Length: 398
Image: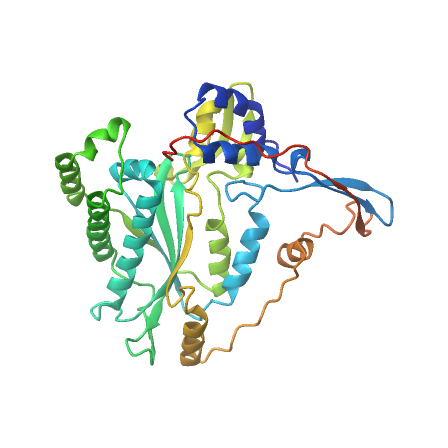
């Protein structure tokens, strides 16, 4: 069932005025993604006409934009990714560890997304693997999935990485599985201190190499003394790393991952209403025991906040580390299963037809008539009504 309001509706209604207001100040990526979301599942992208072989019911199915920032285009991609991850599950407790950054670092990250988001991944992964390998803690080589989110509940810029980690790892000789203690993975205060040190070291290296740039209120940080002073301040404050209670069955891990992977800044289901000036959406106030609230934002401010979370082109927001790294995951998992006396996972074979994959993975069967259950057949194709717009290039600061 279609939500009452979608991000695409907001872009179509308020996007043209927003583009005029900020003409020359929006990046090519921002303009391209706005256009893709506006055109998604409309005549602009073409599609096909289907007719039921039973009752003759006809419907038009327009093509999707398939942009990773589009709220309507993540369902099948998420289901396919989770189906692949099912083969990676181990008979061990799983832990959820979150690495955040202070507001001062988030500001630097916004002006240097590709560089600082990469540092966030690097520092989080090095921290987990270093502390886990220490014999005083676990003494094992671990593996985990890391997922970047850049938003908070109200769409503000809040970069952080979610790590889902099996509670154990391979011994240094890879000849036995070392399990963590019940309901305890690694000490948070130790993780936090090492994470802060590693992150700031990598940030300093990026500055020394000339890979960071600063403008607006942060322009003074381009000078070495100012940047050094900021690093010194950041060493003295607490960096928040937190862990949630371990999961139960492996199926819970998949269900949990499904809530974090392939997400965009806001789901259409959270949108409540839109009018000539305002957008209303649901959010949860974590400071008041996760209380559900509704926020009203000026439509242009809503669009601005949504566009804060566009990732650099080609940037991977889901990454695998340790024995789950792509290069040797299959071999490492096979060795771990032998140590744990676990049977090999069942092979999942999916159809090359997207409608069959959607049916097999989600239960949504587009081949069946919504009126009588008969078979829907394609009787005509609809060409694209327009070509994608070509936006003028500019210095892309996002």
